[in-house]
Image (tube, rainbow, N blue to C red; front, side, top):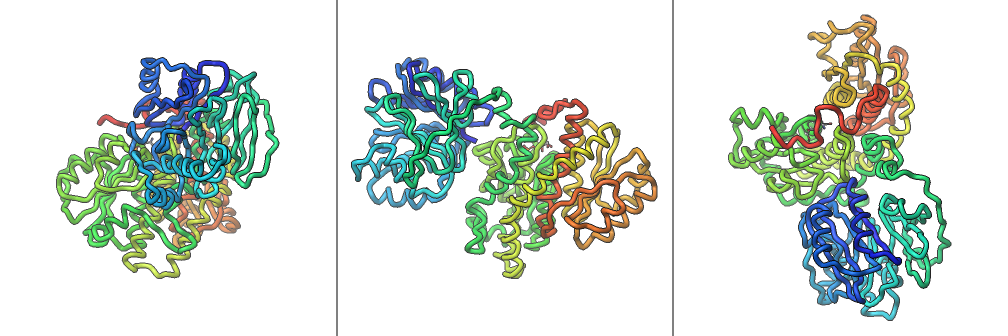
Length: 613
Ligand code: AGP
């Protein structure tokens, strides 16, 4: 996600801002920039690429300034490039803004501003916001802080912003809703940032802005905080006792654990603007644009690797089950070399968190050459696979730093669920009643994911019992068979324990020969049409002294009597269940890896993005 910094005080601002942005690089970004007040004029230095590249622009100009704002951009609206990077000027150049978040109603605001003669050079929602603020300033006699407050009352969405005004080198106006913003209070100086890492070395006195608060930061006037409803707020100054590294992980021990716990938000953000609950509708722009292609397609071929391939397998159950469109799921590394039969009547969906996986990129280049329509599902805006695809949709999971993919997986499954439901509705292959039921249930998923995360202590206990095993089996049926595969991959890649996932019914075709008291089996055994069969599978394992760890629904009264350990998760429609059943498997693997002293975020031999064959 984006990073924000700001400074006003007696130091030279540019080096403070740049060093602060480097502290925020861990958040992931594709471009950066700063805006400073130099001799009453606003100067902006911004560039796609690393902070160090933008720093060179600043060093060449060597500006003098004691006030400025800075930004690292994680693209959500508009590709990564110099023009879309922040800060953004208003039309007159009188004010400049940086922004972390998403303005959901930016299109309607932009339409109004265009009618009033405003022009835009970027594709961003942020440039719309800075011109809305300017429009308020031009039509009223209010201060910058008041203009920001008035403008934000017209905004729907999430923001952490900082705004500076030409001719005023004693104020920065900031505001917060849905994205973090903290003010560092030094001696005769103030800092602002997305988290405390950029200023913790200078001061540990901090004020965390609350939702819908606007603050005026001025050396002469001090710190004044108001709500966007204009109620004066007394600043609550905290003394931070955090180390820089723990702030980057938001207090979690590892990025992986932070990202597992971000899943309610990453799923919510992936649904945002696409699941329109009050209208009982789903709207995915790329799908709407290519509706005919999808509805007339002979089949959908999904190509991916690793965890993304597991998300593709879940998608096969969803799309075939709901939209009745044939789906094939292929390892990209196999697809690209087997001279596949692909025609222009095929849709090929590439799934990739990084958007840079070499095998997946090559697979879609091959499919494209054979005439297929390519749909990309990536988590990194402007990545190679996203750019190679004809169309696509992004998972808004935010940067995933841990090598083991967690929030990206559930974001991919969330997006596939939306796609399957939307195609089914367009085809009329499901009833309005079921469509509305699934919309309501999908809307409740972030909350149920949080409830499932709250069961972490049970996963940790189970991990303590099985941390020294050498092998482990994971079983699931139906749409939870890919979840079993994903659970096995998580365990093997971060704890180095050999693990395999199987369809539960496959046990009798060989794997049951492996069962003994030293072979634990994790079984997804939630209430589905397969439930009784899964109970039989569990009994077959128990009869051979196998240990059972079962993921069941709240109140389960059968499996919980025969399994050695159960984790009870909230009830949910089977089609949405992978979004919940995956969570305990992520946590069990995480805790086992920690207990085994493994390097959870950077497991041996692995890379976060496999950009080579
Ligand atoms: C999953 O935890 C692994 N990190 C790996 O299997 C990963 O899913 C695979 O390399 C694909 O990466 P991508 O999603 O970035 O294409």
